[in-house]
View (cartoon, rainbow, N blue to C red):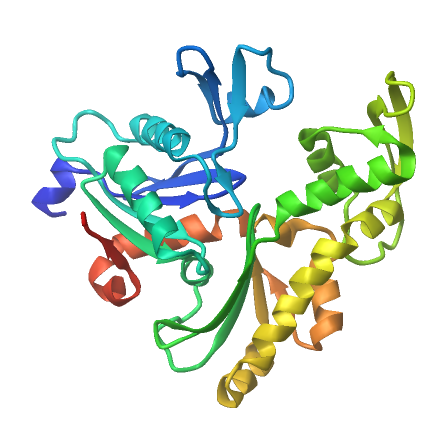
Length: 342
């Protein structure tokens, strides 16, 4: 243990559209909370962060607003993201450390330089001494335990809340990747739209997410199920209950799922033939919250004719990857982007 380990605490952050996970060196994953901040509008004072703030989504009085500061994997509201990060960093970094922490933070592979700088500045303003950025599919691959430094190719599909990333990785680099801004959020929106169009039923984001988790699927189920849902009738404006089937929800989800499959096809088409044969041998690893959607692996298997495996604990792959990188910074230095003040 070096002198620096005593005076500072390094942390890895998976700053996600839906959830933020934090890994502290030597302690593992210490925080997994929704990326939501509730603020008092008149004073801009933070009322709640994380799970407590998520409970308030769609339920706040006019004076309070529950905000999700990240959209499609990138920062949509700079100030609120900073509040979110500094709150989480304060929670996990003890005051006994003399120095600010070094932070490894994951970003979608398709983000622009401006978006990258926003993440970097947010982390620095929230209390980081040094900020390193790592691309999400690379962090996911490291978190799963793939040999990213080897010449043989690995394919990772990371389906998050705001983005889906499909990447082929070899020799510590991303050979080709496709990043689309479609993920769990789009699926929730599709469910909301489907119920509105077909049943004149208005539901909120949280209800849509619950429906997706309980009966959502990407592939026909052995036993189709139904679920009773509550919402507001658009015609007469009063609350009403409706029973919906898993087959109907699968139909509602078809558009975002087809978009993800199309992106996977494109990524495979762009893969050099030598690496394509590696993927044929090894198969594809699916990570991120979207990997938990029932039948996602079956659907991908059917569409690509390749072996598709869902990673163990897919929600934490990216943050586990940042943790592995923190433990071995010199080995992984070539895949990190150092954040410098301009």
